[in-house]
Amino acid sequence: MVRHFIILSSSYSKGHRIALDLVILDEKDIEIGSQWIEKIKDECGEDTSISIHSIAAPSAEWSAVEKEDNFFENVLVIETVEEFISLIQIDRKLSGADVARYIIGQMSCTHLKLQKLVYYCYADYLCRTQERLFEDEIYAFALGPVVKSVREKFKEFRYIDSGDEGMIEERPALRMPVKSRILFAEKGIQKLRSIDETIEVYGGFSAGQLVELTHREGTPWDAVYDKTTVQIVPDKVIWERHCVEKKI
Image 1 (cartoon, rainbow, N blue to C red):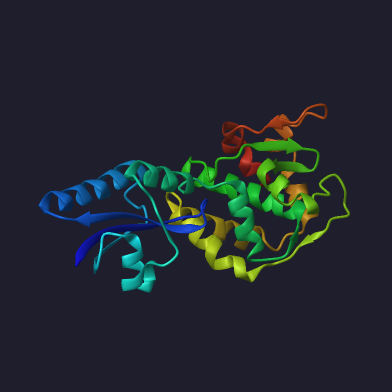
Image 2: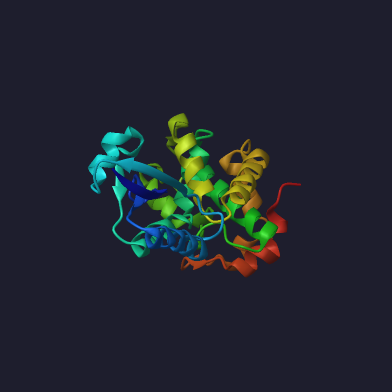
């Protein structure tokens, strides 16, 4: 029998659980496994979600591990610790589309309302923590702040310059996978809590009401909106002016 030392995590970009598989031949191999864990935590964060497994199998082949325990079936084995880290790092950062998918797992809404809720989640988190919720920039469009990745992801519902909007239906099947995706991100628990708090406050508002809030005089959108070009709404402006557009 051969002992396998396995580090297991998830890659949402690959759509698989991923693993590093180290065959233990002597004490030096155990030390290598410990170094891998330390390197992953150093480069991806102490709160990175990984699990450690030790299993005896008839051979050094991964197929032998799968036959020994079907828990390891359909796991993508990664060749190097560097590639493993790279895949985790991709998923430690959120996009606006990740937040949008989480929202539509909670409620049905128009694209316009979704855009405003994603923006509000971003602005609230920025003002609570002075950190970005996701990587996308915020842009000032005619009907308020827009996240372009959300615009592209749900473009079939993108009647953003019209009051005639299609509904993006609630998809309960999304709830657990997307929740796990957010929790996997850097400071995921904090981010999910903030998103939930924003949805609790603003989820009952109509798209029109949310637009009215973002269009108040002195809001971040009001400060940068240019009818001739689409401008980025800088974090500094959101930080300074988000209070103007918050619920009274």
